[in-house]
Length: 593
Image 1 (cartoon, rainbow, N blue to C red):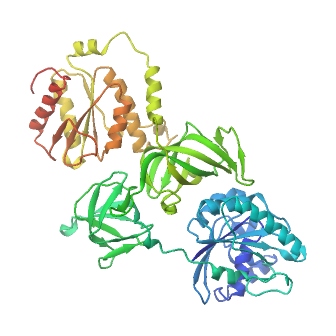
Image 2 (tube, rainbow, N blue to C red; image 1 turned 45 degrees about the horizontal axis):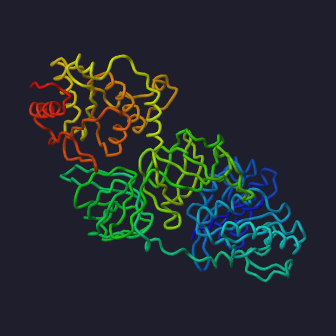
Image 3 (tube, helix red, strand yellow; image 1 turned 90 degrees about the vertical axis):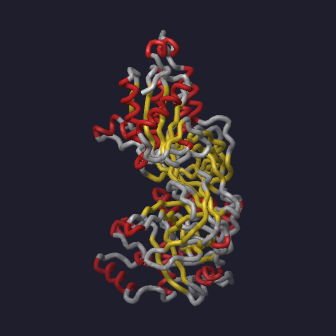
């Protein structure tokens, strides 16, 4: 069972864990003596916290910087205890430690009382769905084991947690340094007749087995094997919830593609008949479907996930710079990665006081925003009220995790941010004196964006280049551009990272708007294109249109190509068929090649 220990900096979390393990006899042999000897060599007083804070910089600064894990067992069961950092600068490390915990011990210093991070940590535990919480009022020796102090903290913090729909199971007065009420009752608190910390930990209930919930597996990768006649395509990932068996019908979201499980593969082991939550198997399918990493694999006989580009979320912001509208971030949910923007702030809550802050136009550091986010392409997710594991996400800003949150509900979009930008672009578009009809009459053809889709092995790129050459030889104004040629100009000077595929697609669409408006036949080839890539190019190229040529059997859902060709087609016949279609569309005059 995973238990996380949280609390404000210097309130004694690490000391609680170290003393608990020492008194419970759970330390490795010689560990206690080793740490005491180290303290003596460095002329420092011994601290039980040093049993966990193993890094030199943590010992030097006296604070827990990263989440430390330790393992011990009681006669009842085995535990993983996470010591989460309490310093305000390391809140995102605390989120990491709490993400998979089933219960929490929240430590409050009796002498200092409830602090801002005491409240923030309570909010994060609530947001992560951790409902089993015990509050340890530590350092009772510093207030002479005063029941009055203990009752005041219990009353105030209970009221705070009640606003978060969290009902703590117990408040326990302790002194971690002295070992009071950790593994045995102490005579110093005759007024307390509840369990010790160790008894409380043993009383936490194990969460219901995730294997009994709907099947969810984020696809991490798809592997293709070729040696010794092996033609398997193996879909791999970590199963978050549920169970799947050979023969089950499955679907992938957001693409909607479906198949049936043919086999369940394990590394260096015999194939399995079924797989369940916590395992990381690979799957072969009866029907080969082309899915991308990041899709969510589910069972067709169970409730499907939500899919969309907009959702309402609770977001805890930890970035140094505020979260702003109009700025693009990266969303990570499961194995999916997608550009994301802040669309609307419906409210901001001060997590330390749970008070609303009205009229905010940005989400500042340590704020909790109730907001609407929009991704550049659809993502699959569940709602936090249904399956919290596939409702959690993080937001990345400049390669740093800056926010974490949970999805509350999907939001119907009247218009996307991209569509609104295209609308504003067209309103501001400065036109010259030459009309599209006059260009077409001069060039003897209209401008068009010709997009080839299909795998490189199917000859897609080569055919696109051959079309450019043939049209050029017939005096057409044409230009072929590879997606790899769309780059950030600053990147060549080493000042920026290469563009992502999503950014390249966006740049390609913006270029197409200009080149087709100039009356040119603009040609490109895209491998692994899906309906969202094509829909984005279509939108960015407006008011001009796409002309799609499909090569091979990769058919994006919901998109009908103007020309469909087999994989590895005869080039001459393929070019003739494309030209006939361009003739029929009124793009080219009637001629043959």
